[in-house]
Amino acid sequence: MDVTLRKGTVDDAEELFILVQDFATSFLPDKLAFRNTLEQVITDESANLTVALLQENIVGYCLGFDHYAFYANGRVSWVEEIMVREDLRKTGIGRKLMDEFEDWCIQRSSQLIGLATRRAAPFYEALNYENSAVFFRKLLTEV
Image (tube, rainbow, N blue to C red; front, side, top):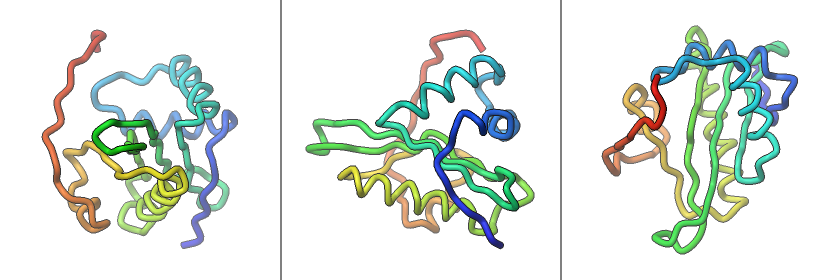
C-alpha cells in the first residue's frame, strides 16, 4: 500500500472533517468550529498535524502537541487524536502516523509521549507503549 504522509493544511479541511465526524465521541463536530481549530493548529508551533494520503485522498491523520513539564525536566508530547479510515485499519497507516509523530517529538527533545485511549490499547501496546495512568476529564461545555 503506497501511503504518503505530509503536514496538514487548511486545504485539507473538507476531507479531515469527514474523518473527524467518525472519530468524535464527546462532542458533535461543527464545521465552522472545526475550520477555526484547524487554522489555529496549523499555525501553532507546539502542534503537529500529519495526514496520510492514499491515491491523493486523506485516509488518516495524527494530531499531537508538545509542551514543557516540570516532572520531565523539559518537553513532553501528547497524541490528541489519531484516526485511520475504518476500512484501512490494520494496514500500517496508523503505525506510519505514529512513527512520524515520534520523529517530530524526538526532534523537539520530548522526554515522553502520552495519550489517552479506551478503544485502541492493543494498537499502542504493539508500538511499545505501556499503560501508565488513569485518565480523568471534566467537560467545561455542554455537549
